[in-house]
Image 1 (cartoon, rainbow, N blue to C red):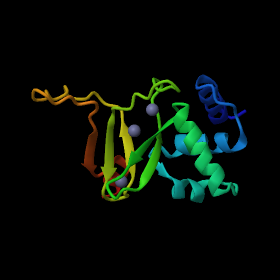
Image 2 (cartoon, rainbow, N blue to C red):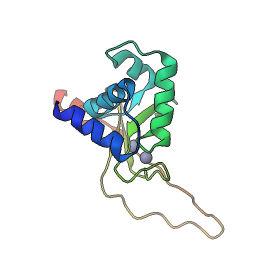
Image 3 (cartoon, rainbow, N blue to C red):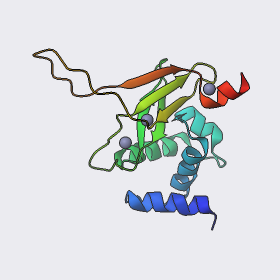
Image 4 (spheres, helix red, strand yellow):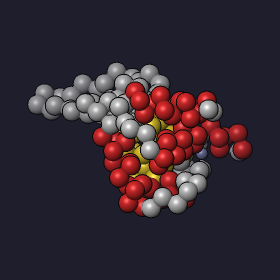
Length: 144
Ligand SMILES: [Zn+2]
Ligand SMILES: [Zn+2]
Ligand SMILES: [Zn+2]
């Protein structure tokens, strides 16, 4: 069995998700690409012809199981990215930085230490913060 497939099966098992062909194929895509994928990306990249509804349902169940999280880009296109290990069905812990590359238009999850949270003025209770960065990604800066 290839290492990649072992990794995929381990991930599904960790999150308590039953393995199916489409789940394995989609996870393989996320692992291989390393950036956030839209529904259209996934449809275009999957080797077999899985229909839109199945893809949609799989994304939804991955999200519920703590495998992936949503990352809307600046144009409002919804993308999905693999979650860090700490996410589960009970709770998502995805307060990491999202990097938007203006060259390739890709969105990356960057798991780097974040600065301390800003202090809210009296009366404001922040329930979440978003960390976004814009610029040129690693792949594009090699080409430039
Ligand atoms: Zn998550
Ligand atoms: Zn780029
Ligand atoms: Zn992310």
